[in-house]
Image (cartoon, rainbow over all chains, first blue to last red; front, side, top):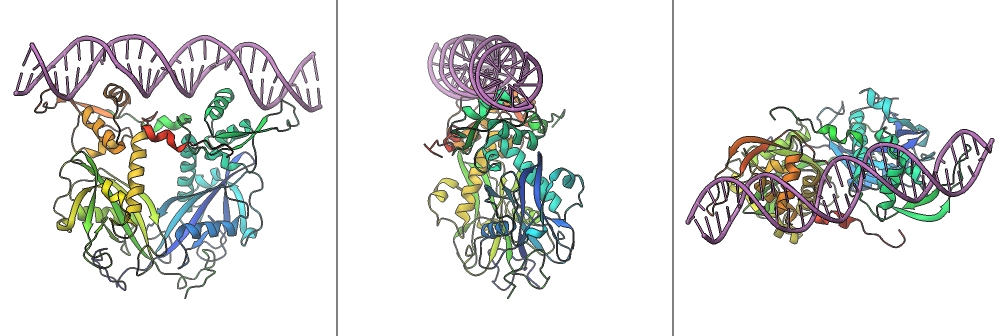
Length: 252
Length: 252
DNA sequence: AAAATAGTGTCTATAAGACAATATTCT
DNA sequence: AGAATATTGTCTTATAGACACTATTTT
């Protein structure tokens, strides 16, 4: 048993608690006009047959970030537009059998039939996040909590970054980009003001010089843009709920 | 040796790579008008005698968050005003002897003689961050990288949260709060505009009804406030460098 | 009185919200 | 033509930047 007074300044290399370290990835995309996530069906106990976020053990010779990228590529062969570390989950009983610390990641992949053949492709699926978040037991382990944090991070980051463009592969229209915001935030945005904001942010959108074709109901062809190099949106675009964090209580 | 194809869906409980998990905490405060951090002198190899961020092993029965709070209280007996998870560092060779994954935390403690007697108090000190960040080897392990991320997180969070108030214990004046911003951001702020902003944010500052005493050079006594309940500052206050992330390159 | 710091008021510039009006495609 | 979508323009409102001015303390 490891010393109970273990301290980074006094430990010996043979005297420390052993943990397993995994990565779990919340891969978000838009499918059928809904914010959705890649899930896999578990093939082993615990939670055999239930849904879980894709992930796996970090290997001894790879960095945690590398493990996340490797697992992601094993699940989705589509190019990942964005991958960032989300948070680390380390409650003692989050895995029923042993002590596992999981480093969770958030990824965005482009729209439209995003997950194709991969090692575990047969068990991978894209499902809407809303019903998963409504039931704490809809995913294995504490993956609903991870997904909730991932969705909130995504919502927050659309406010002050240009990441929404990561939901598209080659090019997109301003209306399609606005649709991403409306779906992720679940609120309508004024088309004219949204356009003024995103086109007025230098480096957010790059004009391709081409137009798309109007949909079956007609309409003017829209200009196609691709993602520019600017990472931030300043000032941000605010969702309606942004202010709700500020509750003024009478005496605190 | 663990299976090289270990997967969260197929592992056995006895077949996984063993890691050590530690927490490291960047405890920021303001000392002598400088952004400063709590460091400890290491009492064991590796990096014996060098400076490091306080931290230690996560124990088998405690959560990672709990470990962070425990280590923090062992180092600083002053109440911690804010503690949040920063990021997890998992490069294979960040510790020269074995595979250690470290979950780093960011803490704010109040101003003024913050670190007192604690388990390791004799070895704890508060030092300015600037010289530490200037030399990649000024701290043990990858702690300079952790500190750099912590400082950047702190700078960013002052923009859109009310966290600066966490640098004060009981009450403070608007000018003292502004000084925090000026020190952390290393840039002057317009006093009148800053006051309008912070007092105009409902729930940021709560009027105590009392004034402080003017300093030795005189001046009007300033009203004392304490931290309110509002967590966010919307719209944010921007530092001058906020826009510099947007570089518009000709073709991307 | 002079210096120092706190606090108020005001003018201007920027950007968002609301929404009307025009443009270009489809059936 | 009429419907649908894209795009432009304009008026109003909110807020930050700049900075002058007033208020209250100390030496």
